[in-house]
Image (cartoon, rainbow, N blue to C red):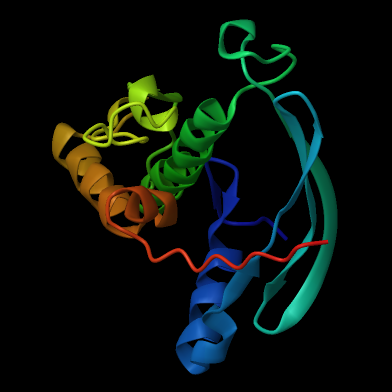
Length: 183
Protein backbone atom coordinates (compact mmCIF):
# COMPACT_ATOMS: atom_id res chain seq x y z
CA UNK A 1 0.00 0.00 0.00
CA UNK A 2 1.44 3.36 -1.04
CA UNK A 3 1.07 6.05 1.56
CA UNK A 4 0.01 9.57 0.69
CA UNK A 5 3.22 11.41 1.65
CA UNK A 6 4.45 14.93 1.00
CA UNK A 7 7.65 16.28 2.60
CA UNK A 8 7.98 12.96 4.45
CA UNK A 9 4.65 13.46 6.25
CA UNK A 10 1.97 10.78 6.07
CA UNK A 11 -1.09 12.81 5.10
CA UNK A 12 -3.41 9.81 5.62
CA UNK A 13 -2.18 9.50 9.22
CA UNK A 14 -2.63 13.26 9.68
CA UNK A 15 -6.19 13.04 8.38
CA UNK A 16 -6.92 10.09 10.69
CA UNK A 17 -5.56 12.05 13.69
CA UNK A 18 -7.70 15.06 12.78
CA UNK A 19 -10.81 12.84 12.53
CA UNK A 20 -10.07 11.24 15.95
CA UNK A 21 -9.79 14.70 17.50
CA UNK A 22 -12.98 15.90 15.80
CA UNK A 23 -14.81 12.81 17.09
CA UNK A 24 -13.61 13.31 20.69
CA UNK A 25 -11.89 16.50 21.86
CA UNK A 26 -10.24 14.54 24.71
CA UNK A 27 -7.97 13.11 21.99
CA UNK A 28 -6.56 16.61 21.43
CA UNK A 29 -4.82 16.94 24.80
CA UNK A 30 -1.04 16.56 24.73
CA UNK A 31 1.06 17.10 27.88
CA UNK A 32 4.83 17.46 28.04
CA UNK A 33 7.21 17.40 31.00
CA UNK A 34 10.92 18.19 31.29
CA UNK A 35 13.03 17.76 34.45
CA UNK A 36 16.22 19.82 34.63
CA UNK A 37 19.07 19.26 37.09
CA UNK A 38 22.07 21.45 37.80
CA UNK A 39 25.33 19.65 37.03
CA UNK A 40 27.82 22.31 38.13
CA UNK A 41 28.90 25.82 37.21
CA UNK A 42 26.29 27.07 34.68
CA UNK A 43 25.67 23.61 33.20
CA UNK A 44 22.39 21.73 33.44
CA UNK A 45 20.89 18.58 32.00
CA UNK A 46 17.23 18.26 31.09
CA UNK A 47 15.63 14.84 30.81
CA UNK A 48 12.50 13.97 28.89
CA UNK A 49 10.99 10.62 29.86
CA UNK A 50 7.79 10.71 27.87
CA UNK A 51 4.63 12.64 27.17
CA UNK A 52 0.90 12.04 27.27
CA UNK A 53 -1.45 12.14 24.30
CA UNK A 54 -5.18 11.54 24.61
CA UNK A 55 -4.63 10.38 28.21
CA UNK A 56 -2.04 7.76 27.21
CA UNK A 57 1.59 7.90 28.37
CA UNK A 58 4.15 7.45 25.60
CA UNK A 59 7.62 6.49 26.81
CA UNK A 60 10.64 8.16 25.21
CA UNK A 61 13.93 9.33 26.66
CA UNK A 62 16.13 12.23 25.68
CA UNK A 63 18.74 14.33 27.46
CA UNK A 64 19.40 17.96 26.56
CA UNK A 65 22.45 19.73 27.94
CA UNK A 66 22.74 23.49 28.43
CA UNK A 67 25.69 25.66 29.43
CA UNK A 68 26.77 29.27 29.11
CA UNK A 69 29.65 30.56 27.01
CA UNK A 70 32.91 31.22 28.82
CA UNK A 71 32.28 34.98 28.66
CA UNK A 72 29.07 34.42 30.66
CA UNK A 73 30.94 32.34 33.27
CA UNK A 74 30.12 28.97 31.77
CA UNK A 75 32.15 26.11 30.40
CA UNK A 76 30.99 26.59 26.79
CA UNK A 77 30.14 22.87 26.59
CA UNK A 78 26.64 23.18 25.12
CA UNK A 79 24.12 25.73 23.78
CA UNK A 80 22.90 28.22 26.34
CA UNK A 81 19.24 28.53 27.42
CA UNK A 82 18.60 31.42 25.01
CA UNK A 83 19.92 29.40 22.08
CA UNK A 84 17.79 26.46 23.17
CA UNK A 85 14.74 28.75 23.44
CA UNK A 86 15.27 29.92 19.86
CA UNK A 87 15.93 26.33 18.78
CA UNK A 88 12.60 25.27 20.29
CA UNK A 89 10.83 28.16 18.57
CA UNK A 90 12.41 27.40 15.20
CA UNK A 91 11.81 23.64 15.44
CA UNK A 92 8.15 24.16 16.30
CA UNK A 93 7.61 26.61 13.46
CA UNK A 94 9.53 24.30 11.09
CA UNK A 95 6.95 21.56 11.70
CA UNK A 96 4.28 24.09 10.77
CA UNK A 97 5.95 25.16 7.53
CA UNK A 98 6.59 21.57 6.43
CA UNK A 99 3.13 20.32 7.39
CA UNK A 100 1.27 23.26 5.86
CA UNK A 101 3.26 22.98 2.64
CA UNK A 102 2.43 19.25 2.55
CA UNK A 103 -1.27 20.03 3.00
CA UNK A 104 -0.98 22.39 0.01
CA UNK A 105 0.71 19.57 -1.96
CA UNK A 106 3.99 21.53 -2.13
CA UNK A 107 7.12 19.38 -2.00
CA UNK A 108 9.65 21.68 -0.39
CA UNK A 109 13.25 21.80 -1.54
CA UNK A 110 14.46 23.75 1.51
CA UNK A 111 13.30 25.63 4.59
CA UNK A 112 15.52 27.67 6.89
CA UNK A 113 14.56 29.84 9.85
CA UNK A 114 17.10 32.37 11.14
CA UNK A 115 16.19 33.80 14.55
CA UNK A 116 17.84 36.65 16.48
CA UNK A 117 17.22 38.38 19.78
CA UNK A 118 19.29 40.68 22.01
CA UNK A 119 19.26 40.81 25.80
CA UNK A 120 20.54 43.53 28.10
CA UNK A 121 22.49 41.81 30.89
CA UNK A 122 21.69 44.69 33.27
CA UNK A 123 18.20 43.22 33.62
CA UNK A 124 19.41 39.64 34.21
CA UNK A 125 22.01 40.83 36.74
CA UNK A 126 19.48 43.03 38.56
CA UNK A 127 21.52 46.17 37.95
CA UNK A 128 18.67 48.28 36.59
CA UNK A 129 15.02 47.70 37.46
CA UNK A 130 13.99 49.56 34.29
CA UNK A 131 15.74 46.99 32.07
CA UNK A 132 13.81 43.76 31.47
CA UNK A 133 15.73 40.50 31.95
CA UNK A 134 14.35 39.10 28.69
CA UNK A 135 13.63 39.97 25.11
CA UNK A 136 11.52 42.91 24.03
CA UNK A 137 11.40 41.39 20.55
CA UNK A 138 12.69 38.41 18.61
CA UNK A 139 13.26 38.74 14.87
CA UNK A 140 13.21 35.82 12.48
CA UNK A 141 13.48 35.26 8.76
CA UNK A 142 12.04 32.22 6.99
CA UNK A 143 13.65 31.14 3.73
CA UNK A 144 11.46 28.62 1.93
CA UNK A 145 11.78 27.06 -1.50
CA UNK A 146 9.64 24.75 -3.56
CA UNK A 147 7.15 24.83 -6.41
CA UNK A 148 4.59 26.92 -4.53
CA UNK A 149 3.40 30.37 -5.53
CA UNK A 150 4.22 33.46 -3.45
CA UNK A 151 0.55 33.54 -2.44
CA UNK A 152 0.67 29.92 -1.24
CA UNK A 153 3.85 30.55 0.76
CA UNK A 154 2.33 33.67 2.32
CA UNK A 155 -0.76 31.63 3.31
CA UNK A 156 1.54 28.99 4.85
CA UNK A 157 3.47 31.70 6.71
CA UNK A 158 0.24 33.18 8.11
CA UNK A 159 -0.99 29.70 9.10
CA UNK A 160 2.23 28.99 11.00
CA UNK A 161 1.99 32.27 12.91
CA UNK A 162 -1.63 31.42 13.74
CA UNK A 163 -1.11 27.78 14.80
CA UNK A 164 2.48 27.23 16.00
CA UNK A 165 2.41 26.53 19.76
CA UNK A 166 5.85 28.03 20.41
CA UNK A 167 5.16 31.09 18.26
CA UNK A 168 2.01 31.54 20.35
CA UNK A 169 3.92 30.94 23.60
CA UNK A 170 6.57 33.55 22.85
CA UNK A 171 4.25 36.06 21.21
CA UNK A 172 2.10 36.71 24.29
CA UNK A 173 2.36 36.76 28.07
CA UNK A 174 1.99 33.32 29.65
CA UNK A 175 1.01 32.80 33.27
CA UNK A 176 3.83 30.94 35.01
CA UNK A 177 2.77 29.08 38.16
CA UNK A 178 5.95 28.50 40.16
CA UNK A 179 6.16 26.51 43.36
CA UNK A 180 9.26 26.24 45.56
CA UNK A 181 10.06 23.05 47.49
CA UNK A 182 13.01 23.15 49.90
CA UNK A 183 14.83 19.81 50.15
